[in-house]
Picture 1 (tube, chains in turn cyan, red):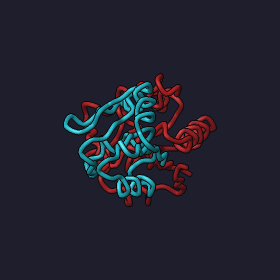
Picture 2 (cartoon, chains in turn blue, purple; picture 1 turned 180 degrees about the horizontal axis):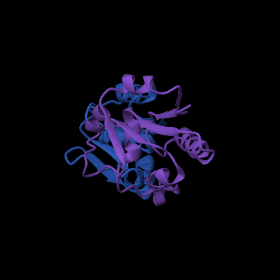
Picture 3 (cartoon, one colour; picture 1 turned 90 degrees about the horizontal axis):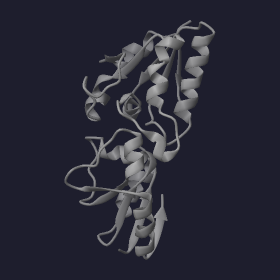
Picture 4 (cartoon, helix red, strand yellow; picture 1 turned 90 degrees about the vertical axis):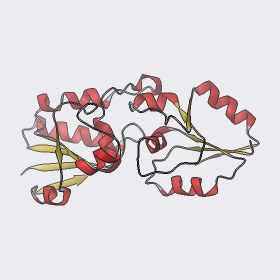
Amino acid sequence: MHTLHIVSKPPGHTRFRECLGMAGEQDAILLTGNAVTALADSTITLPETVYALQEDLRARALEARQDSSNPITFDDMVLLTIQAQRVISW
Amino acid sequence: MHTLIVIDQPPYGSWGGRESLDMAFSLAAFDQPVSLLFIDAGVLWLKRGQDPDGINQKSVERNLAAASIFGVEALLADTAACRRFGLTDDNLIGGVTRIERTGATLDQYQHVVFSG
């Protein structure tokens, strides 16, 4: 993985759109905080694979999208940050 | 004077929404008529089954369950936003009235406050 993009802003925020625009093919996107609401928003198209923090989904009674999103724990998040060559926290 | 407090951001990610809830409960405690309107991603406040222990916060779902006891007159939700976020009778908390025309609803209140 080249860059891990950690985004905490909801889809309506400019930061969310900028993050999606900048993420390349070698990158991974991790949704945290209010960014996880993107998975419940039927108007939002996400890249093929995104990660989402399980605890933030559970807090909001949301579920990962069956086909494309991977719910992960805080420990997984730490592993992802280690695997990535660089991390951008949006 | 009836106050309408509008929440348009999802729960937990920022404090703005919770402060608005405090404002609503405070108005109600002083017998000032107040209602809450949820639009855009704000409708996610109304989803049943929230469990924020893992992010060390208290459930806003439980706060809202007490709204009518505190004297908040109505919990209103924009119908189109509910549809957008997959909210139906099956997964909405109790006591929510869905409205079709948000603009017309705002016109009915002398005082409208947006959260955050």
